[in-house]
Length: 227
Image (cartoon, rainbow, N blue to C red):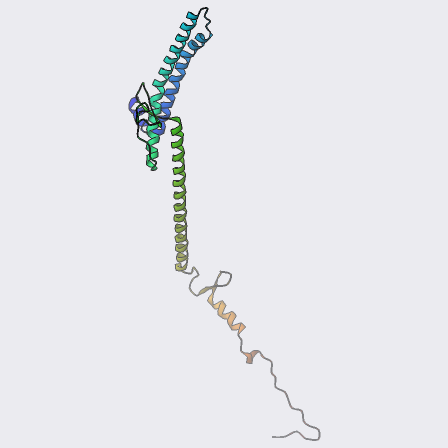
């Protein structure tokens, strides 16, 4: 059950890389604890004769070579898997990757290294840094393109929503009841109040204007005219 669960978890690339790195670091730490004391002892050993010095030197070189081989057995498969995933990611962004060619052959490629112990193909440090920079540039360009189109889509959607909102408000009936109207302040007022105010404000001039009729006074020496 645990093995099945671990297999399913390793389908996630990030999790698989983390597990591989964790295992490799543990093995490298164990190798360091195993070989570091031997190397330190051989380096501190003093020899009285030239033959002893030569023998100590040869033993030291053999110990270092064994340590390096054990280290490569652990790390080369990890570097090989990372090279495969990095080149696959580069091809996804349209970046050309040189074919794998053994650097020791006549048609070798200086961008690739091949493990002599496991046979895994690994990228050189220089080309790996170059490839990561190219991928980073393509990712930035892709993000800028996505952001440009996303801004355009949001602008179109916002305009459509504003237009729909305006159309919806125009189609909504006036909430004021029948025989009511909406005044300047937005309140619903009974229509008869409006008519009454208009009637008071527009009264007949004959009813409201004061009388301008005058009475003629009789002239001196004349008697009032009798009908």
